[in-house]
Amino acid sequence: MPSNKILEQKKQIVADLAESIKNSPAGVLVNYQGITVENDTKMRKELREAGIKYVVMKNTMTGRACEMNDMSDMKPYLSGMTALAIAGEDPIAPAKILKGYADKIESFKIVAGYLDGRVVDDKTVLALAEIPSKEVLIAKFLGSIRSPLYGLAYALQAIVDKNGETAPAEEEAPAEAAAPAAEEAAPAEA
Image (cartoon, rainbow, N blue to C red):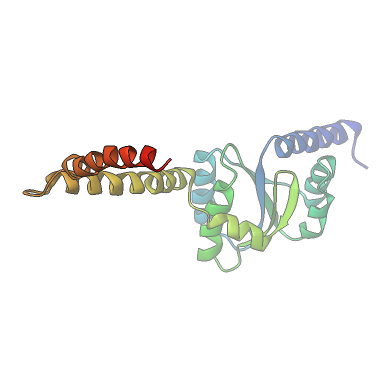
């Protein structure tokens, strides 16, 4: 039977994990069985540089931390050798990084995850991994806004660059001369 000191330490570890999960926008649960030490070291370094906390813990303790955050739906996924990658600022980063390793290593699998406090399956996590980065999305958005403006500017410049044709203001002058004649005819009819 474990001592009270060990039980208190475990409770604190679970509480810390629960707090990390609560404060993160997303996380990914993986089965890390079969990953080599070399690949594991590279993966952990990449996750750390992206601001992602990678936790290997007993499934029962991870399950308790998930329960503390009303995510008991995660418990069925907690079997075997699991680890949890907890996102920092970028909610998509853990999915992107871990998908790269899941593609390279046959036995390394994405099992599930959570997004905004809701448990999601592996298909959803893999779909998240396919989303372009925030910077790419912003660049695409700005490009789509800029494109019509460039089109308008090129069209206006083409009109200005035409040589030997009359300007639009000169073409409107005869229409203005016809307008007073129409006004004179209107009172005669009344």
